[in-house]
Length: 593
Image (cartoon, rainbow, N blue to C red):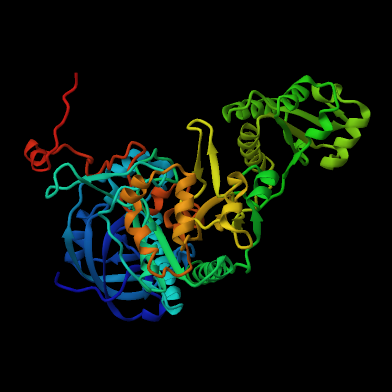
């Protein structure tokens, strides 16, 4: 380069008028207005208009004819005020332009296969991922990655001031049961043995507390071989935190302050503290979700005791067989939803596993529908009072097992919120869900599983351990999840720091002593040497940021994501390896039969 950059394109202002400057970047657009040539040059900060006039530099003016979109330039000239009629108020640099005295073509570009200027909705995602190096040039994607950097720095600054240490934990890990399949890495030096890529740093961060590090954090890379969705990737970034000598209230307090600090510094958004807390039981019974969106109402109610007295056999038969009937009053839906809309909602409920979706609506002061006809006036009156049904309301009922009802009405509630337009935009509602059960019974395997993970402390403060564990199903955990706008963005717990409690939990989970030693031996050993009480939390950074940036997929906040089939379309991976590489790793492949 003959001339080095003096200013970034989007940072020039009227203060620089009259100054000689050099900008560098890509040709964003090109125009010829009667011999005067205009080019918008773009870098990551934005656009600046540069102007070529023959009387200023005839050679540069002639060379501008050859520039095309995405050519790379270094342009030198004088910052000038634009004429009044050419001011662009939509552009931060729209008051000024650069009158070019010298220009250098740094590189040419083929015609881009995707439009850099277009919004992502107009570009097929497979093309965006195939040409990711071009997709990332688009202002929206460029902005996302810069904000992600700012987010990381804000969190680091806060945690450093709170006396946390940033410590790395191993990527080559031990395979442990954490809910998803491990990615395995064969060991060349130890044939037929494997490392596992970490699903989370859970055991190592507990070891760090036992080691006396007091407060730890890292932006950890985590790997889970699970089905891909819009908010899941094989590899993702997790903000990991662990603290010693602290209880649940202490973790929630410092986490809330970290979130408030980061939201203010990065997004200029003020959030109110403390965040509301909701028990797991109430979350399920009021919203049919363990990660409820509390930006709107439409709460669920159990009406089993009311409707079981009626003659509607769908309800009575379900209740007699041990099921439940829950309902949502969609306030005002009668003014918005047609009969076809109601039928569509029934079909939607069936996609959630329901056999159907009963409904009734109030019109002219009376309930009408097949359901209403089977309920006596007295029952209708009781139902109207319980659900606060008014003119124009539609009530949707789900009658089935508790599992099906929760799945159905949780999805129906969210869909109704969208249809009725009662979910406020540009609102960020944080919520703690607490008081989870410690174990969940697996009907298929006929055994107990940890609802979170096996290192979560049970709530047994005022009860001896044997008494507490005599009723495993009633045990509560000292765990907490944090929810933002109906998405879980993080979760954690007070950890088990006593060896006897940890052994008891493993016993309930059906692990043999041999399995415990093989999978968790180093943790069990460490707990015997003065482990302090400790607790922690981990955030899915990509999911959190996608919500704050209003992106529908975490792929839009990850530089190089993979498709739903786990493929990087840009680099074409995963890829085959040579037989020699496999032999070195003592791996044999099985040919297709």
